[in-house]
Image (cartoon, rainbow, N blue to C red; front, side):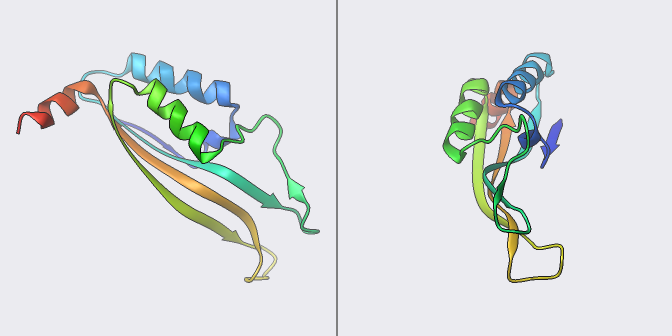
Length: 119
């Protein structure tokens, strides 16, 4: 079982793809991989200017989904997208400083997928 939650968007796109590819290659039979990755991120500074984190993946929802489908092409993949917002930490609950799509996916190895198809 592999779990990646709310951290992979901090890496470059190439590192995320490389990591996922390695995990697919090293996974034993009957594996499940679960990820929650932010895409279409908007971060606002206190003055409402846009903030970017150096070397961050900066995924769009679609290019993240395309990458996942490529890396997990032989696996069964379920994808769900949720809106995500974080309120201002300084107490202004009407101001969001982090807005994104949370792309949630569960990938099941071919052995699990093939087995589930028989029932």
